[in-house]
Each structure stands twice: as structure tokens, then as C-alpha cells.
Length: 81
Image (tube, rainbow, N blue to C red; front, side, top):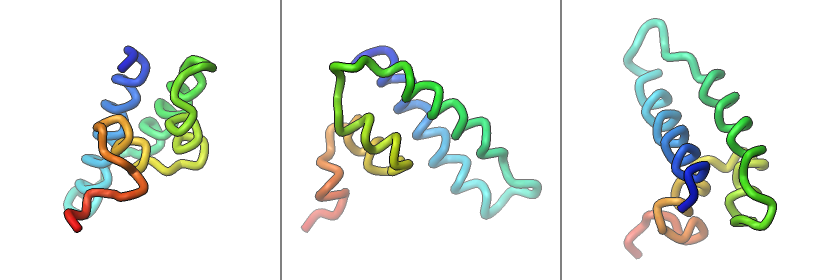
């Protein structure tokens, strides 16, 4: 995993955490800076890198991007079936 991919994974996990906290915190955590960070990181991914990751980030499929970076097949998800 490249350094940029590691940063993307950290940002995706931060987003997931912030979304979960939206239900309990008042005011809710700001999500826009995380989205902006993900957009900026997506532009830094190498052209010959993982095309699926680039596709998921462009389509805002953040859960699939996180699963891919964690080594899980995003098309199968996390279901144990």
C-alpha cells in the first residue's frame, strides 16, 4: 500500500467515525473537511495505481474504497455468507 493509499484509508476511517458520531454529538462533527481531504488525496493517486480505488473514490463509494484498502472484496462486502 502506498503512502497516499494509507492516507486515504485513514481519512475513510475518520469519515466513518464522524458519521457514527453525528447521531450522538450536538453539534455534529464537520464532514466537509473530510470529504475535501478525500477529494484531494484522490487526485494524488498514481495514474498506474489501483483503478478500482480511483473509481470508488470518484463515485463517492467510500465504503467500497475502505473495504478494498482493507483487503476485503468490496463486491462481496463484509457479510459472512
